[in-house]
Length: 310
Image (cartoon, rainbow, N blue to C red; front, side, top):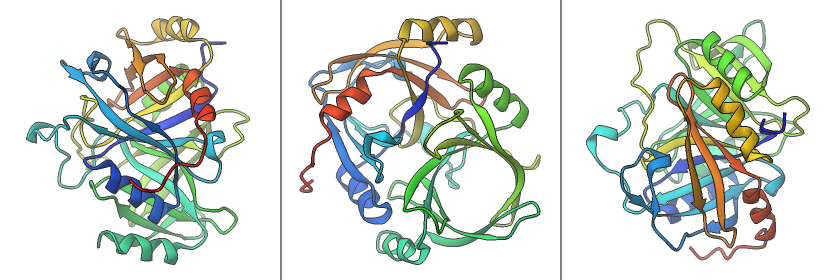
């Protein structure tokens, strides 16, 4: 179907200080800025579940794949939300989007760079049922967003996915199979830092990248707050997928979602112009966005060296 996205565009990360966050992800995880975004006008916030006009500044950051791979969409909202009602819990964990996933061949090097920013750097082990322990790092960025860097001797430092906490693995798997037409690539029980979870990695068939959505169902004793709805809260907010036929995507979503999705035309700046986008939630409140292909084309047009003075 033309309305089914074919690849991931970006994962959105809201931050309090974009210059600080850009330096962190460049210095610690090797991401580089490829496109800067600074819309010239305030925009309606309805699509982001915000009942006022909004504006942001942003930067798309990529690993060595550039625009051929998924990117991190780092945004600073103006003004940012600091209301206690939407702050992260002390653990930083909620249902829905939970942490960014990376791989690296040299964890000691990553740990050293991360420790220069924050003391919250922990070495952990990931053990798949019946498998050997794999070393990993658990980090938190300057705004407290959780990151996991898993050892992989055969790959450079790469952005490999995003983990979601789901209250029902079967329900969430069904949702992403129906709505995004993804396939289950990994399905196993895993011990992560001593905690046993059932995890499934979902990807697109034939996707040349290793990026995917990792669904994790914690044990029944784990109780978490619901995912945050307003689009300008600090931390992870949405996953964006690229569609080449926006009208067909709307028709597809209209047949599957229990509530109508939020539709908007978005000005991202960067000389791209207005783009059609649609927002909706998964069963645990994680926000998914379908955005038309122009964002990728705009990134290619703007894929030139970016000055490092920020």
